[in-house]
Length: 287
Image 1 (cartoon, rainbow, N blue to C red):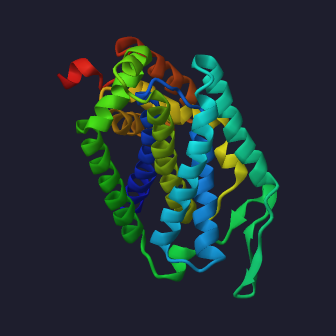
Image 2 (cartoon, rainbow, N blue to C red):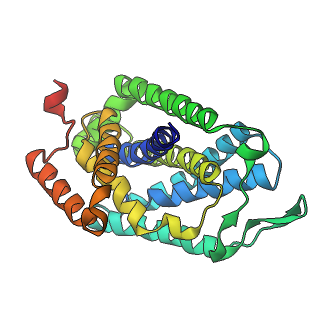
């Protein structure tokens, strides 16, 4: 059962990361920098509980808020570039955050131990769950409840006028502007919402693993986050969820192959993209 709880918790956290990329993609933008917001949420919430003594929920909200602010700051410059240039620019943001964390030294003595981020050595002793008697089941339930609430938010968003506006901007930016839609604020708002989702996922990740390092927020997580959406599909918020479950099942199902697992992993992804070029959950399937 511990294995099942672990998989469920990891899936929930990665669903939030996938939704982060999905939100930005709705407006026609592809971001390879969501891991930067993921890292900000992780570090801010971990600092809040470990060094400032905040409870978990306020710490997660703080991490989300700071990530959303950075989302707005990144969203405005991102308006000037598109396509491959946008992908490179957003990835550069993620690398700036990661390298900034390598230079972050912010520690204090808590209970006789030195805790806090220590540059490239990472951030140890994020022990909120252990110190407050949380069991593995408790953590899994927390993640499931939070992810369910976020998915409910996205379900409502997609049926709202704002959701329709975001899709309109993603489909034809010029036509949307002609119809009176503020393309600038819609795109920046998408970055802010996506950044908040990533920051929430990062906060849960930090407290679940109890140790985070700048190395965890590099290129691999950026590629995987985008792959969730590309494979899952942009037809609905269900797409990123399906994408995460697909990759999780693939990873765990091929574990017995050892070092050959990644070769088969890549082959299966290529086949899936050829069979379903618009993702597993596309507009046609929804209809």
